[in-house]
Length: 164
Image 1 (cartoon, one colour):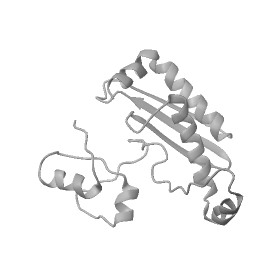
Image 2 (image 1 turned 90 degrees about the horizontal axis):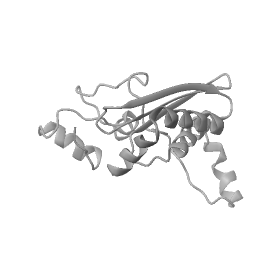
Image 3 (image 1 turned 90 degrees about the vertical axis):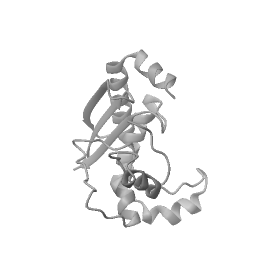
Image 4 (image 1 turned 135 degrees about the vertical axis):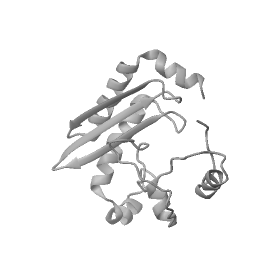
């Protein structure tokens, strides 16, 4: 396994030129870019959890800018907002960054939030997963994050920090 950096096109070039045998790319990004290829095989969420808030589009505004908040409010997708809140609460609890192998996926059905979280070592030698349901996104995300921390133990996170 190697770390690939760069935009989608540069990653696909590395694949085409044989630098790597396979790569994982976000389907949302490929769709948005209109990239189609017979070699693209989407993975089911149950088999491969995405990064936290993967595919969500965000508009950031100043906390006290009520005018901007009112202008963008009609663009908000409430279910996505709830899912992202749960996933980010888990990430915050785990103190994760873009370099730590943390995955999470939330769904909402009839007001009940389901969140699955996973943490792994970069080489895949250790991995912990937890699945829970709740109605408060922040509380649920924090709880899932804490369970993962408890499962992995304190040394797990120091190994991740040492590897960055």
